Amino acid sequence: MQEINSMESQAEEHSSRETQLEREILKLKKENENLRALNIALQQEILPMLKCSMNQDTRLVAQQPQDSSQKNPPEKTQGLGISSAVLTSCARGGTSCSAMVKDLAVAVFGRETLATHGLSGRAGNANTGTLAKPALDQDKVVMILDTVQKKFPDVPKKFIRAALREKLNDEHKLRVRKTV
Image (cartoon, rainbow, N blue to C red; front, side):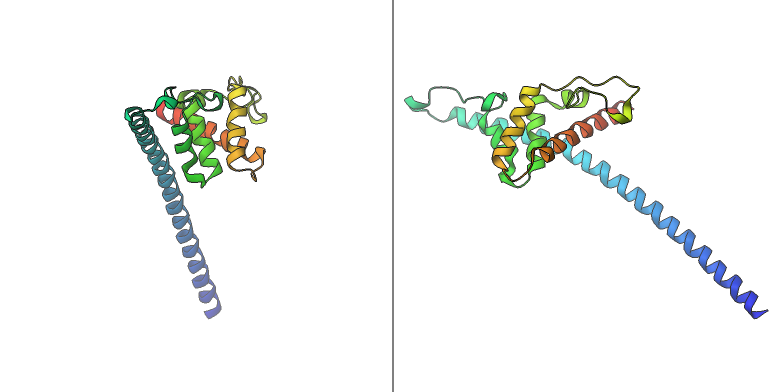
């Protein structure tokens, strides 16, 4: 009889432990969702601030007196359509290759274009029944890849493309969430 009571007691403890673990898993999932939402919100706050500070930097440069050798306006960097000040801010001090790729993509194409376009213009294997998004301007994509490759020569191009693809996916998800 004691063995039966002992087995029932162990079964109750096991069941109690399972429900406790299930509660913990749910709690962690909610915390993860909250952290993701916070991350997205912070990204949306930071980019306008970066753009604002970049505009202030370019205004300060424009206000400084120029000597005769600097009469030309700042060049657009390597055909990307951005100034060297924007390129410098995208580099973030050379700390992260993927951060530079993502910042350059936003500076060159804009968030709306990133949300509605793909890297290659083809539908992926997971989306065989859907229409493909239009491709980004491949010349600009190559220029972004080359620019980042110059700053981070040890990083293979496939990782740089992966970071750009990740940015496209992130912007698409943000756009979908805003419309829902």
